Image 1: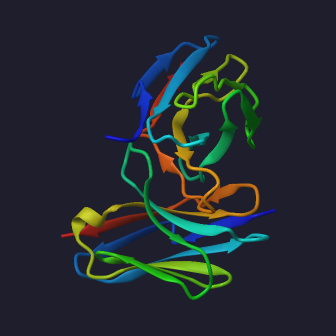
Image 2: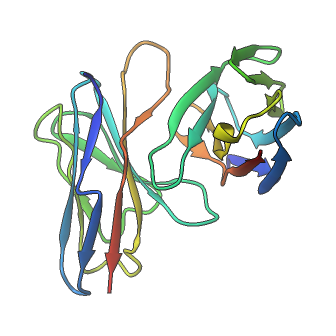
Length: 108
Length: 114
C-alpha cells in the first residue's frame, strides 16, 4: 500500500535559519509528488508538482527536490510569514495520498 | 475570479441529524473530491467524482453520501450513520485529461456534532 511519511512533525526555526522538511514515500508508479501549504483553519494551497527524480522547483524562499524515495522542501532564510503546515502528497495510477504534514513555526 | 467555494465555514449539528456541506467550483474542472482532515492525520478521501452523474467511494465513505448533478457542484451529506463526524472537511477539484494531477482546494468546512 502506498505510504507517505513526513518528518519532522513540527519544526521551530528562528527567522533566517534555513532548514529542510522531508517527505518519504513508497508508491507503485509515481505520477507526481505535490507540496501544499496550509494555514490554520484554511484549505491547502498548492505550491509545487515534481514528476521525476532529480527535478527541482523554486518559489521565493522555497525549493522542492525529488529523489526516487523522498522529497525535500528546503526553506532558505525563512520569515515569520512562512509559518504554516506543509503537506506532501503523492499520486500513483489511481489515488493521491497525503502525509500528515510538518508544522513549521518561524520566530522573529 | 475562479476558485472553489465551500459553505458554510462552520457548522454545528446535534447527533442523529443529517447535514449537507456545499462545494462549488467555477474552474471548469472535471474531477471533484471530498476529504476529511483530523489532527495529526493526513487527508483521507471520502468520495470523488470524475464526471457528472458518476462518483466513487474513497477510503472512508461509510456514513457519507454525495451527488454530482452539475459539473460545478459536488455536495457532501454527512449522515447520522457516520460515527465520528466532527472534523474539518475539504473539497478539491482538478482538471482531467492533461496528464497533470494537482488538486486545488476550497477553504474548508469545520463540522462539529454534539
